[in-house]
Length: 215
Image (cartoon, rainbow, N blue to C red):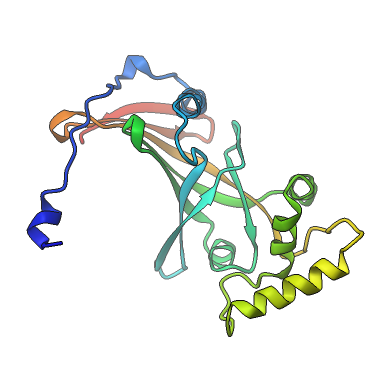
C-alpha cells in the first residue's frame, strides 16, 4: 500500500456522545456501565486491555493482557512474575491500561500504581483456569529466549506426565496484579475528530474530580 493511501485511511465516529451529565460521579460505576454495554454489543475480547509498563529509566513497553476483574480497588490481571512486565512492575510500579471497544467507538484509559494480589486470591483464580492454561503457566519461561517451539512442547509433555492424575499447583512465579487507579479517562469518538473526553482524577486518595478535556 502506498504511503498516501495509508494517510487517507480514516473513519467518522457518529454513534454516540458523552457529557458530564451522562457520566456517574464514581468512575468505577461509569466503567461498569460501559463494560456491560460492551458485553451486550458482543465485542470480541471485551476484557482485552493494553498494559503499559516502564523501566526505572523510562523505557516503555506495552502488550495486550486480559482483565480478570475490577472493583473499587482497581483492575486485576494475571501473569508470570518473571516476565518482562513482571520485572518492570517490581522496579517501577507505575503503569497504565487502555481498553478500546471499536464498534462502540470508545476508549477507557487508566493510570495508576500496580501491586501484587495476595497469594490466596491468585490460587483461587488459578484453579478455575483450563488445565491446559495451568500447564502452560507451569512450563513457560515467559519473555526468556528459547531455542525453538519444540522446547515448550517437550516441557509440556513432561508436565502432562507429571500431573497426569493430579491437580496442577499454581507455580510460585505466577499470580495476579491489581492496578489501583489515580486517573480514569472515558473517550467517546465524535464527528470531525471533536471527540468527547471525560477524565476523573483522584484527590486525597479518596475523592474523584471529574473534568472535560479538549480532544
